[in-house]
Image 1 (cartoon, rainbow, N blue to C red):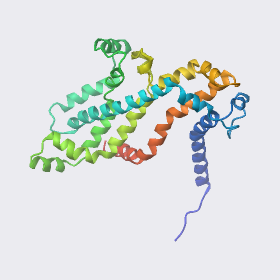
Image 2 (image 1 turned 30 degrees about the horizontal axis):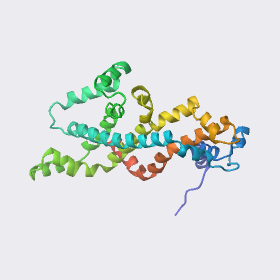
Image 3 (image 1 turned 45 degrees about the vertical axis):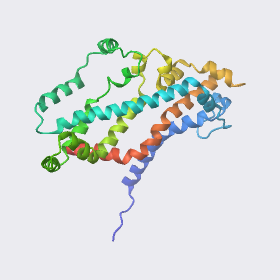
Image 4 (image 1 turned 135 degrees about the vertical axis):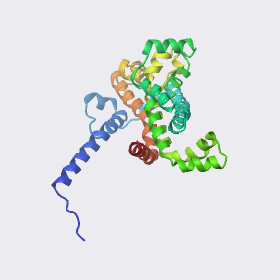
Length: 290
């Protein structure tokens, strides 16, 4: 049996993949080593490949700060509730549109797709949310984004790939559409559901602009708003000076910025490996059957 030789083309591909891996992982690694290095080493620019004079003071400041921990809890709450609302509304919208016998399916699909290209704008949206009494509440962050049209189309395409014979046999046994949806369609849709969970969760976790527009109470701010204030406005600089001892406020602020960023992205990095398999299946099945 002949074995394939490792040629120039394979070597070139390997170099490209190693380069892409480095470009992807090094920023995460750099943030971590800066966050645990001493302030003096960071100020001198000595931290490039390895941490210097390892110190966890930045993380202590982050976890001891009540506003950051409160914002972290808010983000967990918004993400959990938001993903639940998104899955419920997206699947309930996608399933009828996937059924060939649904009357008016084409018109409904056209109207829904219309929202992908035309939007009322920020001011009309704010006026509607204000009239509904949702300003300065978490519902202003969750309900307006209950359905993402593109994700709904992906889920509808997946539902269309489920054999019609399953629906017909269930109808013969006396099952209604709701029971078919809950007992047959959803259990067979684990890949696309996992994909939607990942998409929606990342969207909620990284979202900060709606909170800037609709929230006035700082106790309701998600973590990304606090992170934005730290990175852009340097709100933690004075606090870092008070708790940082002999190290300068600018240096401590730099450590804290990277520490907060790393703490913010850690949950997504921890969850993604467990849903990667379903994520790949969901995207590929939707693209092939679409």
